[in-house]
Length: 292
Image 1 (cartoon, rainbow, N blue to C red):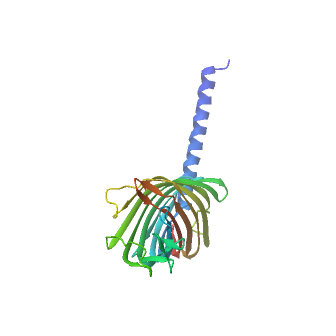
Image 2 (cartoon, helix red, strand yellow; image 1 turned 90 degrees about the vertical axis):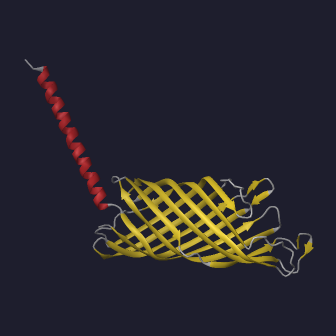
Image 3 (cartoon, rainbow, N blue to C red; image 1 turned 45 degrees about the vertical axis):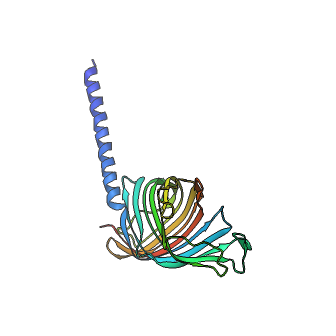
C-alpha cells in the first residue's frame, strides 16, 4: 500500500529543494549582474554652451544671450539585476561665464516711439544650472532600455550693467543687478541604448533620448520681491551620448555630449509677467569611467 503521507512529504521536499535551487540561481544571477554591470563616471573637462531667450507678450520685445561655462558632470549606473538598472546623474555649472544680452524690438516702434535701431537695451548676463536625475532602466531587448524617473533642476541668472539703446526708448531697471532663480521638479521618460559594461570591455558606448515635463516649478525675481511665479507649463527634450575606450583594467576614458532644448511658457501674477523662455544647451567634454 502506498503511504500517502510519505508521498506528500517527498513531494514537498522536492518542491522546497526546487525553490531553494531557483532562489540560489537567482541570487547568483543578481550577484553576477551586479559584478558585471554598471559603472561610475566623472566628466573631468567639459564646456557648456547655453543660448537663452525670452519673448514678452506685454511688450513687443525679445531677448537673447549665449554663455559658455565650465561643466562638472558625475554619476553612476547601478544594477539591481540583469534587466533592471538605475542611474544617478548630476550636472553642475562651475564658474558661470558672462555674456551680453540684447533686447530687440519686434516692431518699428517701442513705447510709442519710432525706432532708428531695433536694439532697445543691452546688459551683462550670466547663468548657472544644477540638475540631478534619478532614473530607472528596464531592459526591453538586448541593450535597449525603457527609462523613466524624476529630475530636480535649479537655474539662476543675473542681469547687470544695463545700457539703453540708441533711441533711449526703454526704461532701465531701478536695481543695478537683477537676479532670477528657478527651482523645479520634472518627470522624465525615454529610451536608452546601454550595454552597461565597462569592466573587461575594450570599448563602451551609450545613447539616451528623453522627454521631460515640469510637475512643480517656482521662480523668484528680485524686481518683484515676495512674488512667486508657479506656472509649470513647458517641455524638455534631450539627446545624450558617450563613447569610451579601455586605458586600464576596469577604467575607460572617452567623450560625452548632450543636447537639450527647454521651453517654459509664460506665467502671470496680477499685472506681473514672467515671459516665455527658451533654453538651448550644448554640453561636451572628456570623461573617466570605472568599474573596479
